[in-house]
Image (tube, rainbow, N blue to C red; front, side, top):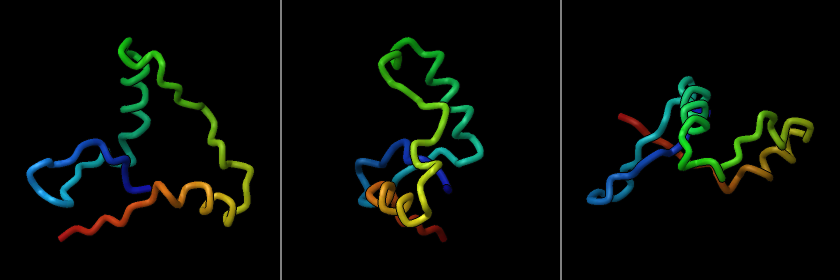
Length: 70
């Protein structure tokens, strides 16, 4: 995982910003502290952990995006 998309530039096409993977755990912990996100459930264990690699790819393929950088 490279990152989680967190925002996009509305005046530009295709410009988005992501939380780097090394900061995702910290970001999730901050979300848990904010009362506005009490209804958001962040699982402590992956739901694809016990699946085969092929099943994992099938489960997450709709959430994969190509990111190109210069």
